[in-house]
Image (cartoon, rainbow, N blue to C red; front, top):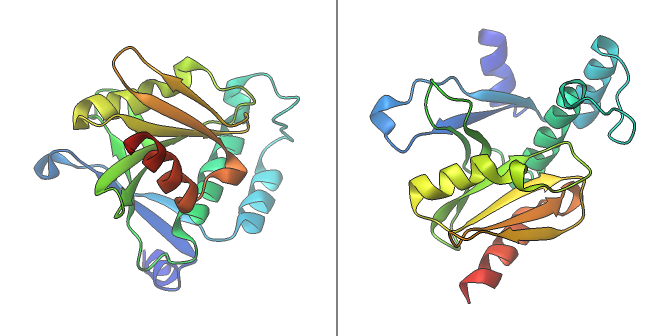
Length: 184
């Protein structure tokens, strides 16, 4: 435990705390990420068979790739400011698998914006379900999915808009910009 605490203080390990709509009932442990994608990829390559977003069809086999996507998105959102920025994660409750990878604290828009990561080449409506659950619970209208699919958006009958950002566009500035485009 001392090693993890030291790595956190050096910003080698980044911890993402769970955001709860009821702060008195949150009992989930934080998610941990490494600050160096090269180290992460090297560790993954040594412990798992080779995977490819293009050639690996089984979603279960692409799970490690999803972890790399999450890590890259976190680093983009923090923009090197891991000590001063607030990013969390959200899980509806302990009895469901409904969770959102990141909740970005937008000072510009005064809200917490949900961001879900998917290791997928296509943006599908099913990828939006966890984000929509969060939007319903918070009475918000805009969320994001980050994947390897092209820039796109889905609008629902309930008035929700979910943007798909390609992983290379998943930055704080772009999330703020696309959120603002719907608020004007």
